[in-house]
Image 1 (cartoon, rainbow, N blue to C red):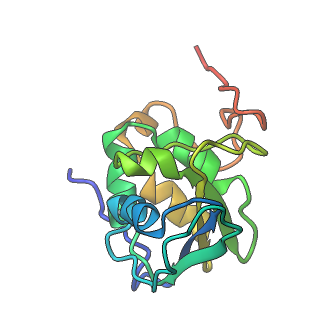
Image 2: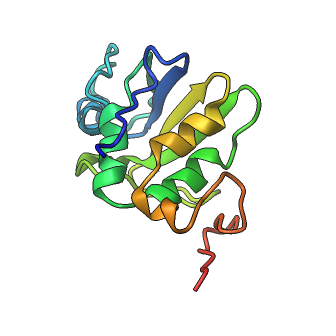
Amino acid sequence: MPRLRLTAIDEGYSVLVSTKLTGADSPSIVLDALLKLFPGFTCGLPDEPAFPSDQEDVLAAEGVSLSTFLDAIHKQSILDTSLDFMSANLDASGTIFHISRQAAMAGKVAFPLPDDNPLGGVITIEIGGENLGDWLEAATWHSGRENIPRRIGDEFTMDADGEAVTWH
């Protein structure tokens, strides 16, 4: 059975993708990283910074499709990790999580550990809407869950420090 292709667009969810530009961050290079995982991302760009720079800008776009991002986590086979990170801050109004901008440059998804400040910065994804937990579970579903079912916050959820919980 082919996988259900979710996007969060026209599915009752709001999506905000953003990243902070600081110091010598090149807006055009950062935009290239964003477009690798979020090709529908559009926003105006500030001027390239001149050295020394105290730049503090934000690139942000609403209504961005998560289709390419979700395809990437499927191709990388990081669906359980993605479920854990994407749902770690889930509440009744939505969720917020971060991915590495440096990994995004290569079209990959990497989730930085909480309180980690990865080289190259982070991309912040905010998703809002009702029954978001069910949507996250569906968006990260894989056939292995037929044998080892997963739910948000179950006994297999990784520890707060990123340590995996094993079941074998």
